[in-house]
Length: 266
Image (cartoon, rainbow, N blue to C red; front, side):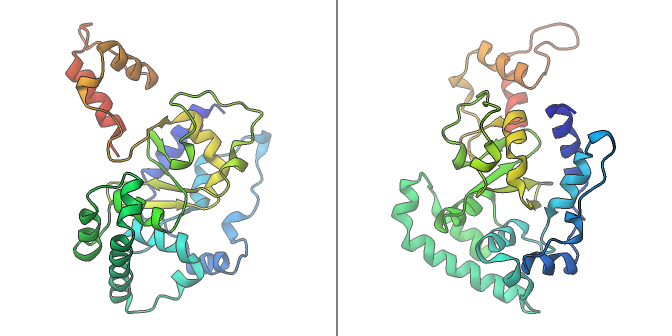
């Protein structure tokens, strides 16, 4: 199966994964460092693995509203502590979030040196909003030195990939998955929900090869004035999109840019 087919199947599954949760039994197994049922080897005929099923078996979506925050909590504290959260979940969530406001203020200089600006937005999300955004998630991970990789249907982002140029052809002799074994893979499943891929590093090589690498989550693409028409057409070619309309007329620069912007928007 080609990499494109693999990622297509993966994306199709992610669009329908919102209500998929791990059972308490499986979560406890993870907390106890045991392999849960969904890790049992599959019998695959003719060596053709069903990638959609493999992805499904490895996804975890917290059964709480602020999925991105609780994924961060699990990455920091582990499934064991996550499973021990009792009935005062809302109060505990606020206590943890407020504690990170103090950490942000204490480490403001360090965060700004890492190009995190407008930290007051993150503080406001932690104290006033029901869910945090990717920016706040990224700040929290930076504070705790947690490496992560963010993926949606079209793009891939991670500070760990900073050395890779956009469009880099990877050497198949390099075990890319082992290189990024400590990187946690986060998927966006819809506008406000996210999933943690268990042992997601085993798929990083495929993701890097088949998704467009961005260098900035907040600004995945520069302003339109930074591109020539031919450069925008190269973007379109990368995503295998036409550069002419139904009448065969070349798309205007604003139209090309808007199409690409919507593809890269996280």
